[in-house]
Image 1 (cartoon, rainbow, N blue to C red):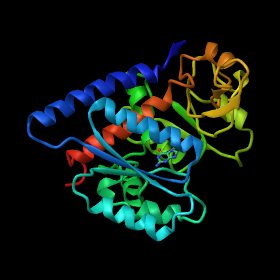
Image 2: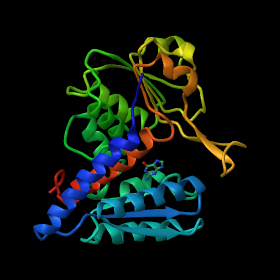
Image 3: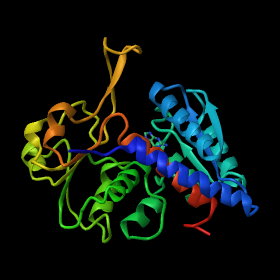
Image 4: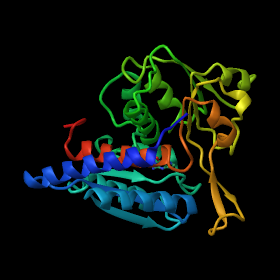
Length: 293
Ligand code: GUN
């Protein structure tokens, strides 16, 4: 069994990005600049945004954090998005999800200028992914593709089963695995809450990508011998074995599944760090105007 070490690979990629930033500065270009917006004080969102800001610092990007109150009027948030859309120093904008319930996620996602949508959530970017046109790709699935690439895992002709059909992970993941290319050319099945006999479908997977948000859902009996298992789940649970009083669990029962796998991602240290470097890569592309001129 080989561990898909997202922490190590993401650190190598961050070094590559940092070198690119030095080159950009050397040729008189401005450094990439990412803005993040957060409304309210959801604990997990705070952690994610802090990680993104820290990653920007590590590679030499500029970053701006816009904090809004939980009860911020929709109009105020939209005005702030418009202001950032117009700010030529800012290359990329992300609005951390979930948003307070009085704010329309759909309207927010559509308000961000396509050229600055480094999350790849805008309908234009999602549509362009579907038809193989250059676009920003959602960071988690793109990070998984990068991990597969760096470990030279064969995907062509393989059966890839994806658990979860979210707009952010499951659906774009399916597109990336099925598209012509390397990685790609896989036969893809998406499973969800209405799938009948999900265990039997999982057992057919050469590559199993789990993004359901259900701690330790996948057990050894659901995994084919020598499968590649990629775990997107991160659930915080109480623990009396850690100093903090909690630990993170994936969607896969790691201890019993890992011995059956050819490759597997750990939680934490697998998909999570890859997601962050994908966001950095999208921001770099935005600064260089690689996708939209
Ligand atoms: N919430 C959970 N994942 C993400 C993400 O990748 N981007 C944003 N903006 N919010 C999230």
